[in-house]
Image (cartoon, rainbow, N blue to C red; front, side, top):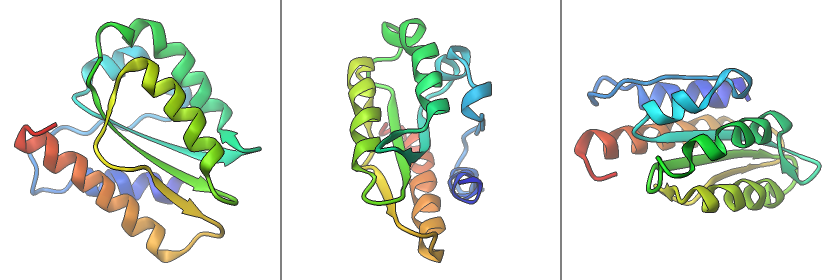
Length: 138
């Protein structure tokens, strides 16, 4: 998962874009980080057909402090699924729908064993978010 996070960060941090990137692990992320951000990219593994426990914990902690202050916040999502990743996708999207955040693209769902192309897809997600924020379209 760390390789995928690093790929997203690499894409978002490209020198082509004039944005500031802040990376937080779910356990260390807080509502203040979300309120600071102009966009958010979430990443999770699929555990037992659900998002990871730490991502759920993060979303629970930021939900009410961000609910009325972040509607329309652009977000991206990547999921490392053991099988199909759909349970994790559904569980994250259910909460994000309540927050009224707006997806910048369909979630990146990476199925099965790690493959070299997974990092490329995550890097592209980071670049898309950065380009959209830099251009003011998100």
